[in-house]
Length: 334
View (cartoon, rainbow, N blue to C red):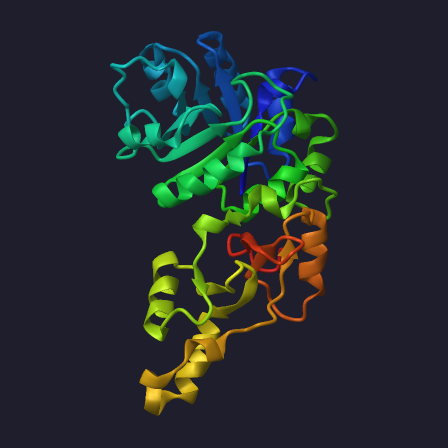
């Protein structure tokens, strides 16, 4: 996950000095909020005169077109328009920067992105008030990220507001492309804070229930009530490489993975049509509870003797709640 440092969150030193300090670390770009203020571009010129950092510009204005010439002149790498400030006659300018996207507030539905989807490269989920540093992360954003990924799988997802080391792990796990970091990055030494954002050694109050794929988002089949073909179709429809099997009381009976199917096909190659899918269920999969914290989940995964790609999530009565996937984490991160 890329990190965009929100430079106006720093209260120490000049713009030039803060930017030069950030450049020492492996931070991807500088995030700059423009609350309808031309003076921001003076700061950008100063930054570009002293560093090679890319500029990630967030335009919060109802008249974005008055800034287009400056954006092109300064070769700004990325521009994001705040949706709620735009007028109805806004025309999306896909040619002013290599990356151009739309930012939305917590209460704005993701459906508004559709009108920009042809040209927009990304969405920016604002979990706090635009341009205001130090707010708390809104957990509802996890759900919106999942919904957006389903609707627009080719588009980048960016997040801004309240991102700290505890949130960072979850966003990385969810495949977020870029996180804007403000007050957390600058409250201590920048290098130390940056390392914490990349770390898995965290103490977090977030639980599996906060960021798991929920019941309606995952492939579930009822035990003794599906054919081998239906199993294959369910796995193909959801593209997760597995199906979760429930009993009559919606409790977890087990799961079937692509590996289980492959072994069954090899074993029954001469008689594939007679494979009983219930015979290939793994009735003892590793699971976590919905109340387990991120820290508990990480410790649990590390103790396993085999790679973990997914974990069913159950409640205390073993009823199916959801699924955690780890395919977005880089190899060896856990």
